[in-house]
Length: 347
Image (cartoon, rainbow, N blue to C red; front, side, top):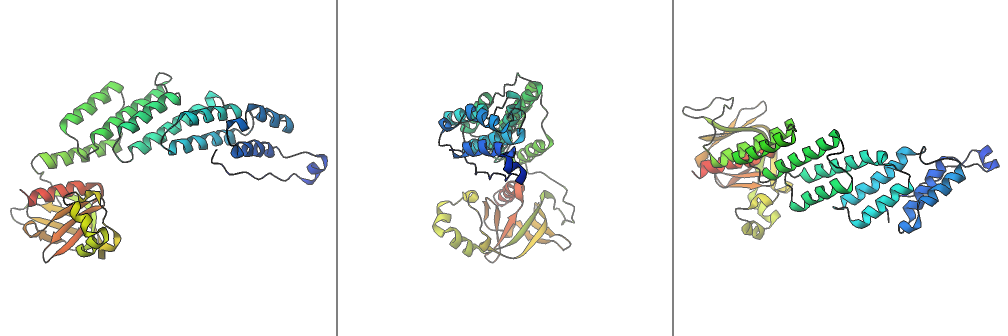
C-alpha cells in the first residue's frame, strides 16, 4: 500500500539480550515495518503504536520525531508525484498522522514544503494548465494552507497566485504590454515583490513580444561592423555543423514533412550534428549573422545568403550556402534569435 522498504532490526548488546531488553530503535523499526507491510489502513493504527510504546517503554510523542515526520513526508510526496491528492490518499495520510502521533505543529512545515514543491513543479515549464491550477487550489485547502492563518502562509499563497499569473502570461514565451499591466496590478493587490529571476523571465518575454510585433531593436554588439551595419540582436550560445539529410533520417522524412513550419515540437538528435562545438556570441545585424567564438575571429554570413530557418525544441537550424546547415543553440534566447532571423529573411 505504501512505498516503503522494510527496516532491519538492531541486534541487542550481549548483556541486554541476556536479560531480554531490546534496543529502543527497534520500536521504530516495528511500527515502520507494520505500516510498510500493511495492505490497507485497517492493518495498523494508533492502538498498535501505543502497544509498541508500552513494550519498549517509550512514547512516540517524544521519540523518533524526525523519523515519524519523514515517513509521513515520504508518503505525501509519493501521492503528489502521482499528480493529485485523491480522497483515498487523504484518508491514508490522516490515518498515518494519527498512528504516528503527529500534531498540527509537526505537519504544518511538511504541508508548506509539499505545497511549495508542487508549485515549483507546476511552474517548471513556464505554463500552468487549468488542471494544475485546480490542483494548487485543492492543495491549499486539503493541506490547511489558509492565507488567513499567518503572514508567512499568506505570503507563500500570494506569491503562488502571482507566479501562476506570470506563468500563464508567458506561456507562449511572449509578454504583451497589456499582460505586463495585469501582472503589475496583481502584484500591487497582493503586496508581493516579483523575484529578480522572474523579472528576468518577464524581460525576456517582453523582448520576444517586441521582436514579433514591433520594429526590430537596435543594440550595441561590441564588435566592429560594416559601414551602414547595425546590430539587432546578441546572445551567448553555441553552434555546430548540422547534417540535414541525417536529421531527416533520424526524425523520419515523413514526420518532418507533416510538421512543416511546426518543427519547434521536435528535437535535433545528437547524431545529426558533427564537427567542433563552438561557444561564444551569436550576433544578428541588419546585414549579417555573425558567430564570435571565444578567443577566435568571428565567422559571418550575409542574411541574403541564408536559407530556411527552422526552430526546434533545443535550438534552430540555419540553412547556409551550398546546401549546408548550422545548428544554433542559444538556450532560452533561441526563440528570439529565430524571430529576428525570420523577420530579416521575410521582411
